[in-house]
Length: 203
Image (cartoon, rainbow, N blue to C red; front, side):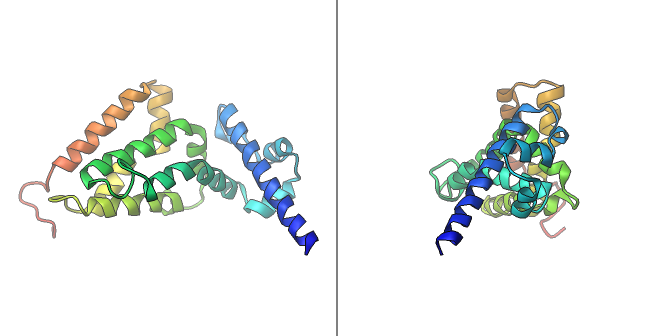
């Protein structure tokens, strides 16, 4: 039993060391593609086999690091106070949720880009995307007069895609606060608009 407990502790320490090393490397390197599993293993002081046993592959490691960084935001969304928490009125919560997504991706540009570009399947099937979409759709369904919450959630999240954030912040050098203001205005306009004239929710 003591050996098993020691093994679990070692695995937990290795996992934390790997996540910390990956966190540092993705922050320092200019391109996400410059960070390899070998680089991360070396920085963490573990063998490559340890990485693959703990995370499966590079995509699994990216997801784990992404989730670790996202944890404070998730806690605020699931049980925190307004404007992110569940007690917030829908028209206030939707723009707050989108702002949180944007700020997270601005703070984690290289990691978010690596995760969204590195998957072998559709990014819209990724767990983190489906979670945000499901949450937004549920909140949008509570907005009076708004139709097709499913599509609207997709459209709003498209404005926070990592490649778009990278383009706006990196290539166009749009300041952070201006991007936040632009997104807030866009979300407000979407929430204020009803279905196009002549169309019903069924159409």
